[in-house]
Length: 186
Ligand code: AMP
Image (cartoon, rainbow, N blue to C red; front, side, top):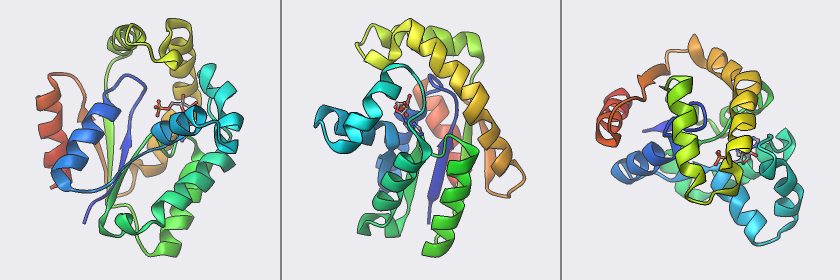
């Protein structure tokens, strides 16, 4: 059983690795960023609330993301495991996740923390900007990194002392990093 949290800064390759690993393990890939982008595109109530924060590279308020994650995790396909990509991003989200998973009797089995140097992150984010993701314009990317260090990096500390936590070197080819992640997941 794999109930996984994929941590790491923007540009570390979380999204790419998450998709590949979920495909190999046959578990749902739960990306709060994807769910929010879809909500923005569909102009749902959630999307309208989230849009401004996302465009500025800021975090969407905790309660909105916690509620959408709870809804997703209680769907049937998550009973056989799941991978969370982009959640939790604050200590309050991490604590809310602990509570919801203990209610479900389904604790996290692996926390993978992808490690990439900041200079490499900025290069990757600049490249992504040319692919047209509006939240990856260079100015917004800088804000996203700032938000990461201030609000999300402490989430690693929340899990570091648990036996489930593992750092993974995020440098190298996509295949090399996938191999490292799969090794950690067993
Ligand atoms: P991502 O694709 O994971 O980088 O997420 C894109 C954007 O969605 C982020 O910059 C945030 O504005 C928002 N977002 C995604 N996940 C979360 C989260 N767990 N908490 C708050 N905001 C989030």
